[in-house]
Image (cartoon, rainbow, N blue to C red; front, side, top):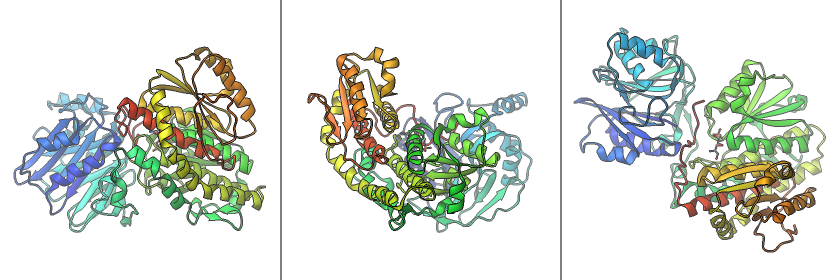
Length: 606
Ligand code: AGP
């Protein structure tokens, strides 16, 4: 999705903007551009393709200490140089970068057209540039406010005005925007990763908020021109965390990081003595936790699948009815929001628009919602009533891996809290805690099996289509396995409940359709194995992901064995080899693993 950077200070802006844009590349984009304001007035450069192509096209001496930049993911109009941002006013005085979608752009365009304005792109953003240039307000802030009162939709914008070279004016509504406070310099970005090289002192803008940013200070204010005094917070990200650290791909780096990051996540959160978890950020005491009669989990894509794992953990441990629903559908079905339901939003980025809208819907209807979120200070984290930070560290690869295992663990902790104020015994709570403590070591063990998994993946990479199957606890694992494979390898993969095969999908089983079956050592193992015979009988190739001691029967069937944990926690570990399977299938097929086609890391539009 689109990315914004901005700089004002005592250094040359262009290299800083280019470096910031390259940090945003992982989000997905198809063109990029910058505008720099120097003694020669505003200069705008745009390119289709990579940030490095834009960089190569810049003049050697591009002087100017204030500028804005953008990576664009085409929405209004195809990926062309004309449609790339910054978009400018006719006279070139105003430059604007914009994330989001202006809903009434067509109407405003018609009106401007009628007044003789010449458009040079098909973007909704260009409308903003022309409107600011035509505003009669005496200040840039006034002109931006003027325009914001006329547009509807979602946006994060940064505006550069030749007449006001000492400032950038930025605004946010439904799309993230962060200010970075440096020493006699200020930064603007839509994503922390573009800032962390320069500063860890940041200010998150809220929806409906604007800011004037000069080299030495910032002022935040509302659309009613009331100052909204904001104090910078210090973020806990190491610049090294957002680099490749010698790995070829972020996806593999992030898979291999899991033992370390999980150990860090668990630190201080396990209460051995009382067999429970310490989650102070939930802002819920035992009485409140006890009061909820239902749990509803909201997330998108893989976060939704892990939400299904989480719902199972909550039902099993706390015996509270729980389910997960795609956040993207939630608000459109006029959901019944119950006061005694605990709503849980789950998101790596904390910026997924569909999930953020679901949070707002719950709050609008008086519901109580907590978040399981990775990115500290992100929109969803701030909008929820409380929450659990996942502490997975920055996740750059579009295909989420470590953040998902962290979500699984976050749900286990939440389930423990809900369970221990109900009927789960201390001993059972301690059993889960011991299980949680074993996870980092057990993931290490799974990772040592990477060469074997890579071999299996290379074999599967030749298939046109695959099935992933699992039952009950294993079904969300199968869904996530299929999702990961299709995201990075582009192989068609569908997940089914193993029990459902005979009700239809079995018709597709043949020698050319492999099935990856999740067969944990649990109360359903025998039924699972029996169902797999239906596949074997039809000559369908099989790969089994299982636990030690499960007798698959046929030594010719490749098996990936995962260490056994407590049955409630097994799904977390069963997902890890599927991450490696997807990674190595994509590697065998030669795909751009960290930036799969058509996908973005942070889906900030509906
Ligand atoms: C995961 O591999 C996917 N890229 C995607 O399904 C993702 O989980 C989904 O878009 C939700 O993102 P979030 O966790 O940042 O909200």
